[in-house]
Length: 326
Ligand code: NAI
Image (cartoon, rainbow, N blue to C red; front, side, top):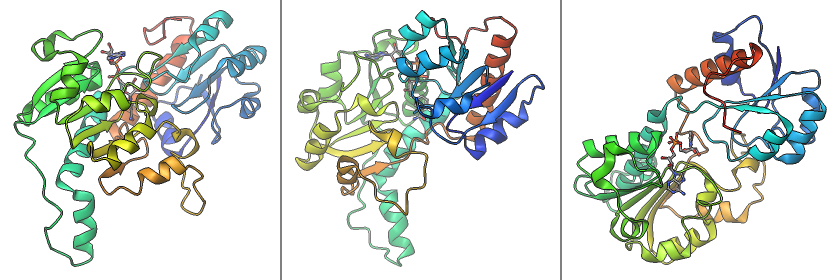
């Protein structure tokens, strides 16, 4: 079976080469998947896509015309897929639901600690022979209240780490997890009482802009907000206002609403034509990483392994539980 791997990077090729099955022939394409680049998959039987690849209705319809009936997502989130259209066209969509929740949880906590203890500033200061501590004052994580929105695999892994720090947890989820039963509260109480708020729910019509001017109004002055889930959970313009009026004291983002045009590429010699993103970078209490929370050796191994298994399951006409119910 020939598979067109879009948005392919060196580490994707290395990952798939470890699980090489002679029946899977990977055809690597550096471009992001969209209607224009889909033609590069001519002659392939399946597509392997990543977080910012476009799997909207027009792309899926054209895939169907080309005879491609399987998409193997090498990620957990699937907000970039029009599942209704895929279902109507009979295109099967598989994903990697839980390659390493700990990878994302650990990056989330790293962002909290970096912002709190201002490690991003300290790193530069020491390299400049500046050992003054002014402006580097942090706070103890122990005893602080952390609000976790979305307590699935990653939210739960984050909660477990923070419990170890001695944080008080407040959780919100539309489907509570028994392990965190005593911590659930309303979204309003979570906003009002949390010193740190971390987002771990998927992007959906219900969760889009869950952080907006109204929710920010309910939060404590100087709250720390962390988003390692999906950019559009946050109304970025409202968050910039929150930074300007000091409502937000710290902001950590691994994802950004318009990241598809920016992330995963070296743009250091180009102009970034995104005023909102540029404005975010002007605040010293904002830490942005380029969708790297998943990026550990262990996670990459799992991603390539499970994606290969998903493709082999499709090729043999079986179902291994990683398909989205569409
Ligand atoms: P999961 O499916 O295990 O958990 C998601 C949880 O969110 C579920 O418990 C669900 O009930 C809850 N939820 C759904 N809608 C909600 C809403 N409107 N309000 C509150 N809770 C809601 O997913 P998992 O594996 O924990 O991943 C979460 C998200 O993390 C993914 O959807 C993806 O967007 C993001 N992600 C980011 C990565 C990165 O590298 N930055 C890597 C992997 C995932």
